[in-house]
Length: 434
Ligand code: GAP
Image 1 (spheres, rainbow, N blue to C red):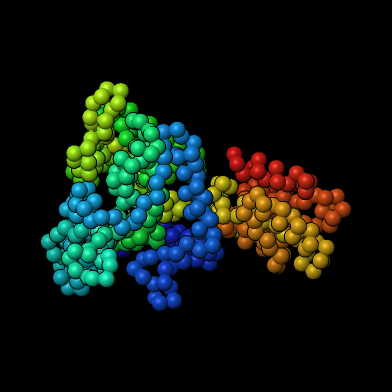
Image 2 (tube, protein in one colour):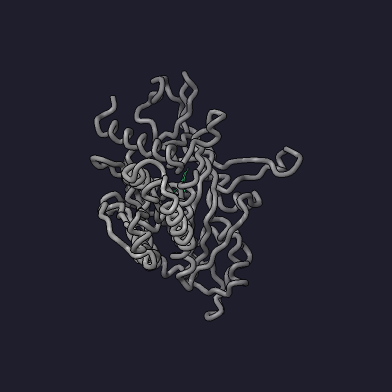
């Protein structure tokens, strides 16, 4: 039987999923055909939120640093990449099958030896490879089998030499990439938390072996700062788990998982791993990196901070969702909000107000993402913007026509302030980019 906290948590997830669908953040994928195995599509507001996260990440970890460059590689790589990386052999989860209903589960998701669905007897565990296969070209045979990448990371290793030669970076330096990854997960679920197609933001940071502990600590702090200062996640919801040796991925010598307290329980949000020289050694067997200063050949070691995009979106939504007596509000950090500002003419049937509001709206659009709403009463319009996290609402009334002043209402405090139209852009900019 479910306990009370579990029911409350499920209820919270249901509310977030329902808001996401109702307001255009995230829809079930292929919905009109009955969906497809926990796939999800980002709608008009969701894509803005997701893009804001990706752009902030790129700005902070690529543009604002001297020791980082980016790439954008192909999703499907030569299958030899996955042989060398160890994924074809090692990238698997233990799976059990119910002998009665034939449903399959990851072993860590079953609490007893019985099927969680029908209480039937479970089979012995066997390893199930998570690589998603397809065929490339017109002939479907053994030779045309290829795999969708299960992590963006490998492209950074395979392109290492090209990046080195074209960017003229020297150790220590890093390569970053944002892109899709695919895993044939045994049990996808919990909304966008675990899907078979998802997005990652990854960094492979190349160093000399002796520096790994120091660099690991540096990236740990960078990741903590990203969660707290950029995404604005509440500290009480984040924890760190040092992954026990026996559970480490095949390439890792040390891994920390950053966990977020999702409504369905504490679960992995991001990871930080010390991948040693495992990857470069396997890909560049005869061509180690030449350290020009020391005139010595070596394989750089790698620290890997990895961030799931979809899990970032989910954590941000869970953290921001608040129910108050009169309203539901998404207290998103303004930099993340899909719309930074909404403009309302006080009355829809007064053309002079609507015209002025449109003029202000068009002007604000040069700087921000802006919504325009002239439906219903002002209270309903505020409610509607609160629910999608718009930090500021601007009302155009008769004062605007007479004194060139608008009323700006703050989402969080619900306080209203008069602001001169000529100062409106600066006023909003100052509040948003803190
Ligand atoms: N390159 C290392 C790597 O891929 P991982 O822990 O397997 O490590 C990194 O994945 C991140 O990708 C996770 O911390 C998580 O945020 C995200 N992720 C992994 N599998 C996922 C899935 N099935 N659905 C959504 N996000 C996933």
